[in-house]
Image: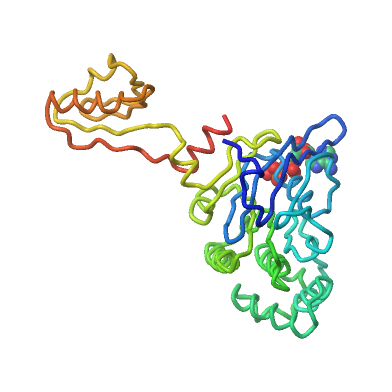
Amino acid sequence: MSEHPPFSTGAGIEVNHLTRRYGDLLAVDQVSFTVPPGTMTGFVGANGAGKTTTMRMIVGVLAITDGEVSFNGRPITAADRRRIGYMPEERGLYPKQPVIDQLVYLGRIRGVGAQNAHDQAMDYLDRFGLAGRAKDKVEALSLGNQQRVQVTAALLGDPVALILDEPFSGLDPVAVEAMAEVLRERSAAGVPVLFSSHQLDLVERLCDRLVILDGGRVVAAGSTDELRSGGPRRHRISASTDLGWLRTSQGVDVVDLDGTTAVVHFTEPGADQAVLAEAMSRGEITEFSRIIPSLSEIYREAAS
Ligand code: ATP
């Protein structure tokens, strides 16, 4: 279910057949997806699937072997890239420098005035529970707190897009919530947000869209609703009588059967209606419902 940019509206970030080789290794292979404005897109895939490599190419810190990146319908420029808030996988803060000095410095590199950078940084530090640590050296902060500073750096200067490489890893639940709220706000303000994560429950809760990479290729991409409705068509059936007859029914794969309850996969159109009619003729039906797959199931299905 990969999507191809020609069908998109052109707004936000578009990645079109992006490819990256490291010697003989094809780390990212013809990857295409969109991150529309105002959406949170989760970027998932096993270790080594190519997420970091793709993000680096989008923000321009890694050369593209082939393919292209567009922003708002035209090839992305260096000026666009300077206005993207990027949180790299390698965290890269200076350990000996006080937190606030470093944030002001990073903000200024991004073109934000010193006072403005200071004020914005203090606001975010406050929201992340770190206002009292602003004058501490980075090295005095725990890893999770350094991560909060790193995300703050990416948020400075009203970025036109956010590309965040595992922004939630290692954060405690309170920090996860604070971070999620900030990202939701940015996304609601029209900013395209792409973040990678191995925490599927979090991705499920936060994202409207999903891109699943496997071995450098997109194996599924689209809105979470689309991906869920395109998942395996499974139903749960509960009845007052034994459902063993389902095993020999046409167009039905029995996934699980326990006397009067069953989980089935309909393999032919119309099989659901036939089964429902048969079940009703045999007794009372107490449940006949479509099982909406979870993100973990979609992920397992797509990446298997
Ligand atoms: P993770 O979830 O572990 O962060 P990832 O999905 O971000 O993984 P990448 O870091 O993009 O994956 O790596 C994709 C592939 O490219 C891997 O096979 C990796 O070993 C390889 N790779 C990444 N960087 C380099 C490099 N500088 N030189 C050679 N190979 C590399």
